[in-house]
Amino acid sequence: MPADLLALFSQDEFACLDFDDAALLDKVQRQNVVASMDQLLGYLLRAIGYQNIVRPKDVAFRRDLWAWGYSRLTKDTPDKAHLDIILDTAAGYIENSYPSACHESRMCTGTTTAAAILADDLVEKPDGLEQLYRFSQRYLRGLSQPEGLCAALADGIDDCDKFYGSKNPRGGSFVVMGWLAGLDAFCEEERYAQELPGQFVGNCSRDRRTEWSVEKMPYYLRNLAGLSNCYIPPIFKPSHEVEVPLENWISAIPDIQQFILLVNDLLSFPKEVVALENFNYLSLITRARRQVGRTSLFNSKDGLWTIRDTLHEAFDQLLSCTAALDKLFINFAESLSEFEAAQSQAEMNGLTKGKDRTSKMDREKLENARLAAKYWSEYRQGFIAFHVNLPRYRLSSLRATLGATTDTREIAVGVAAIAA
Image (cartoon, rainbow, N blue to C red; front, side, top):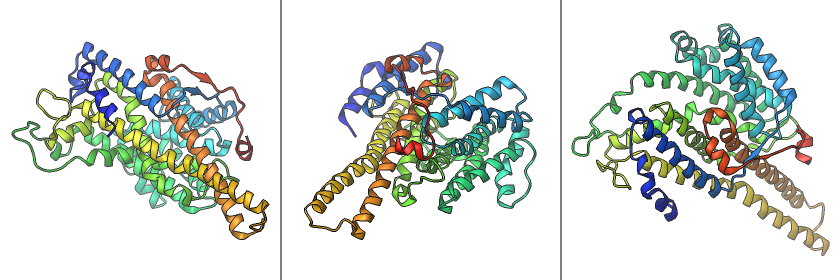
């Protein structure tokens, strides 16, 4: 673990993070936590080389997304203002995270994302929870879905399967199973928000603590509910014509999952503290660590793990997985480019034949590596930008320190995007 990261978190000004339940903080304490998070998140984003580039709005995509939303979702959310917020959130995520995606790709993922945001809201209501609780079962058995949200979700998942599985069916099934698992996890989260599993309800003191391990449960639930698997294939398939083969990115899936979850959890944390929320990944993992008696690195009052420890660990994990993904995609593409240059020089010197099968295969590998690096770089940048610039995350102070550059380029789609 980087020594400078430990030194950063060890500073006295971050002692306000030595708590384990945000719901018990008073107003001043919450303000101190948010101010500290602004400083720490600024450090984190600079460390991974983030630049705050705001992507332009896609007028055609937004027109079609709003038309779809008003047609398919008004039964379950008649409040037009609330529906507009849902659609704007889904559109902003797609525009920032997938700048090379074609219109069809944007609509597939955008409509299903909007429906999922609404589903996450509705599970908090008994009627909504009942609708969604059996959604996956009905879908897998080929049964009809209730009119409204569930029917819209089923159609959106079907569209994702057709688009992302058009060349390789595994891409489609990967997305489908991600959506089904995620929607099931929404329901489980709501149940646990009301009452945690018995293993979590124990004595969290150093002297008398439960001995069973619950440390991995929060990550398991968060990984499902975070929908990361739904959003990985779209990174590498921007259009029907262009697709990076699965073998080029399958080994990166665990790190991309972790990147997606940690970026969302860390950049969401300030608004959750303000809202006194204590049922989120960072809070649950803190509770789990205390449950099994994990000690703090920062001399907490009772000696046990606190939010400061969890944040320190999450920062380290995000820095590590981002560096690993940069090496896997960007550095690998650069190394292949160097190989191509050497090979071209050898051909010029007559040492190899230009039409040699190995040479052709290497060039195909190089092109796929270049595309993978391009799309990963776009997603890496855009997914963070979505969180930083969306008002719902309440990161205005952080945004001010980062500044912003507007990407004024016209949106290119499909093959044209690759040539840009």
